[in-house]
Length: 290
Image 1 (cartoon, rainbow, N blue to C red):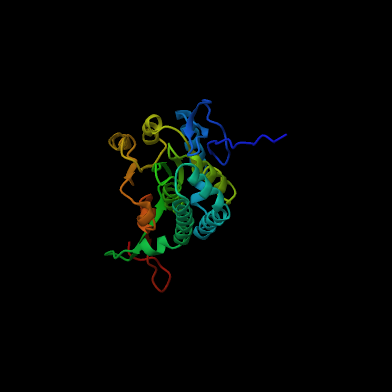
Image 2: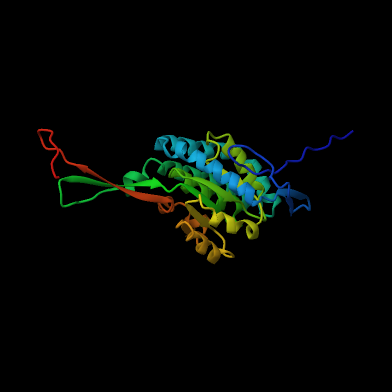
């Protein structure tokens, strides 16, 4: 007797675990060979659970040494390289040519390495010592903004996902991301890479589902500090929702991720600038400048 193949169940990724959507809903996605896969149709409750997980993970992730975050991002690249063939097959299954799929996976790996390199360098590169008219040192440094929601581009489904996640977490933020609606398979598999790459649970949370249903909640949640939007349909509404708690709204639909993803200024877009004053001590050790 021929054996029955065990098909993969595509789940969402919240808090380092792979739950099914709390609503039990799904939607079908047809592959190039005619096979139909069922994908979790995430709900508002799933988003709220993911934001809680991201908020709980924020303090630990943002307080890690920058070089340690760099090591973890590089580990993501290592694990992605080791599963390169699997990702190529999944991209081919949703309609990409083998050459295009191979290039997309390779560029995604390189993008992880690129931002791994910036983790412990961007503060020195973009921070400053400011001139002030008093006897003080005045430093401006960058700090992560907090929890970031991301509505990833529809295409390229893997490279777009990686290009949005890497600059956000490289700077110490945590995130909740809505994967491509029509090609979500690689996002779920990428969650498996994250889960085996020393990324703490809750730092990256990946949901699958409908933009029409979730875009409103991604941008209006009151415990979200910034929203990145990589599509076009709901931009105006998301910008309006950003005013509810003065969250930062970033329009990344303008980027061609094949050409523009390696940019340290993307990392800065989810950073806040903190300025610190410190009195200068004289030779005798007494503080001056008051």
